[in-house]
Amino acid sequence: MNGLIIEPNLTDHDDVYQCIVDMHDNRSMEDSLIVTSKFALLLANHIGDPSIIRAAAAIAGSKSPNSEQPDHGDVQ
Amino acid sequence: MTTTDIPIYKCKPYTRPPELSGSVTKRFPFVIVGSGPIGLTLALDLAHKGHDVTILTAFDFIAHGSKAICFSKQSLDIFDRLGVGDRMLERGVTWNVGKLFWKDQEDPVFQFDMLPVKNQKNPGFINLQQYYCEEYLIDALEAMDNVDIRWGHKVVQIETVESYAKLDIETADGTYSVEAEYILASDGSKSTIRDLMGLAFEGRVFEDNFLIADIKFSGTDADNRPSERWFWFDPPFCKGGTALLHKQPDNVWRCDFQLGWDIDREAAVKPENVDPFIRGMLGNDIEYEEEWYSVYTFQCRRMNSFVHGPVIFVGDSAHLVSPFGARGANGGLSDAENLAWKLDFVLTGQAGPELLKSYDYERTIGADENILNSTRSTDFMTPKNSGSLAFRNAVLELSSEFEFARPFINSGRLSTPTPYYESPLSTPDSERWTKGPKPGFPCLDAPIDWNGNLDWLLLQVGNAFKIVHFGDEPPASDFETILCPTDSLAAERYGASDGGTYLVRPDQVVAARWKNATAKSIENAYKKAIMR
Image (cartoon, rainbow over all chains, first blue to last red; front, side, top):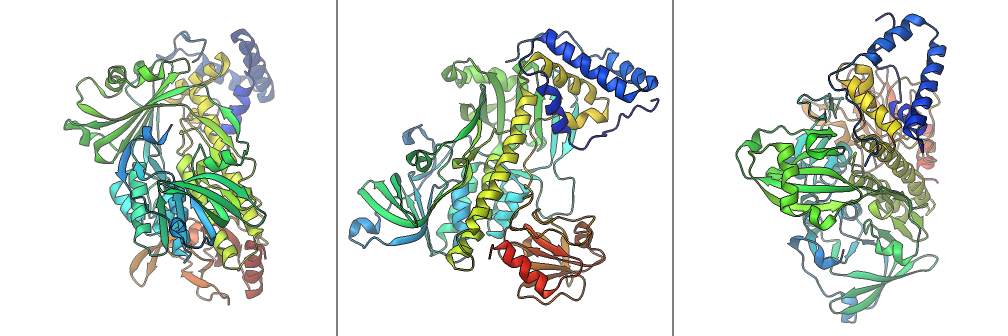
């Protein structure tokens, strides 16, 4: 896949996950989208290899059978 | 909840205490308050070590109902050493596999094995109703002549003096007092002792309700269902929430459904309201009867310190976690085993009272790890905002195809022993080790061969300080030594295929290890491990 790593490549998933979701504390959906976009741009710049970024974009952007419009923006 | 609301599994006899029959009030070395799994385990451990044990419990019964059900490998190792492990294992439902489902997909997005390291005596987990666990511990305690379980003795007042505490105890025959040098408060999440002492219990309350439905299959298909932990994110029968299914002995199944915050709790447990959830999860054609339905909320909190002068808190009285990860009872059992040997050393004069401070140090590490893990699980299951919901769903969506996403899925990080990083009792490595449990880490199990008889390493270590030596010539020491060949699986797991020596604490934690041990280095490490 053009060098994009799709096997597990982290040691502490829970730490990383918490760091990611903590960015969204007390934010609206629109705000969260901006935060996530900045985050993606920073990582894209760090990676620096367009072929890797294109490979990741292809996976992330592909429509899977499960994807649907979020129907519960306010989570209970 | 008042005592009369609690369902009863088995009645236990109240007996009139000698203190109310004119016997002179003596000062006990210690008393245990509470008759849950933690207090009973602590009692059995101390009784095995030869101490006279008195348990005070407000109840005169073993409670029925939905409580702890998952007992971890480490808890089974503890029960083994106390002689009750096999009975639990025989009765319990063994499971190693967990499956995760999302929405209405029939195939799991991911499945995992709870015991990736094979060739250990005990499985990753068993499911066993808490009342069986308590019953087996009580049977073992009642068979000993140095144990006095005082059913129906409720502590109503505590007064701590510097070197002891005085308790007022209410019974059917009136109130009496005892004094004890140590009070071991294993009296649960609503600890009377903690309340009476006015001690803070800080943390986070989660605004969510969960329905627990323990049901008994009456149909024939129940036996065909696999003994696995099934977990659903956002299933059709519990929209926007999570659900969990666990098998217990006697064809009882635990079904757990997230209901949200603003609900009518009384209505939620009515059979007609529970039924759609159960049929949604298990299918319309099943036959079942109610064993016990309840709604619970949970909290993650702990006391700042578990040791308050002569009063030591153990289990839920000291710390509370969400149920996801089975870290409540299992974490409490680790407390009990950590405390038992230390208190034994203090009571017998082998160590000074400051050794008990290391219980506080080590078990607050354990509690913090359990709270962190269970908080993170909860945040994954119930995202707090649309941003984190999107990440959660992205993880689940990617996971069926991409392996890298699967380790992010968090439906509860199931309880494993906590390493005691930088414990004052550990002697850090002075040589280079690339493998094996470090000082402060729990021992690993492995099969060992005693002249052709299969045994397990963890059955041999524990209960006392011991040396585990890999090789033929153990160093001189005062400790009982377990010899393992260097070409064994044990040696490989302990990174000692070229030889090596471990000093192991009575709670099966590594105190120190050496490539080239000497009598002097072992003696020094032992002294450090008991703070002498």
